[in-house]
Image 1 (cartoon, protein in one colour):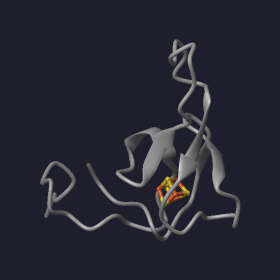
Image 2: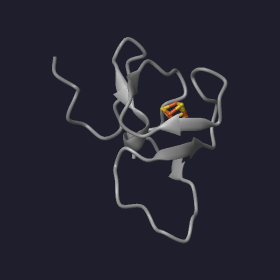
Image 3: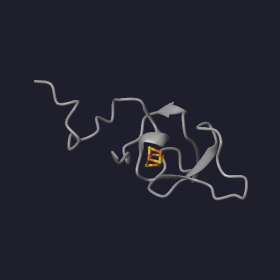
Length: 68
Ligand code: SF4
């Protein structure tokens, strides 16, 4: 059975994800705005590597990923 398109589907911790797709991720506030999807941001959840600073597009595993 294929569940991957359903928004309520639980994230599979085996899948690689990007923080940019996670509700816990926020770009740092600054006066220059954010003109790059590769900018450094912040995890407001439980970061996969223990670091609050996270790169939006870097792929990794995360057990705390929250689907948008
Ligand atoms: S919970 Fe995981 S996927 Fe979400 S922003 Fe934090 S480190 Fe990234």
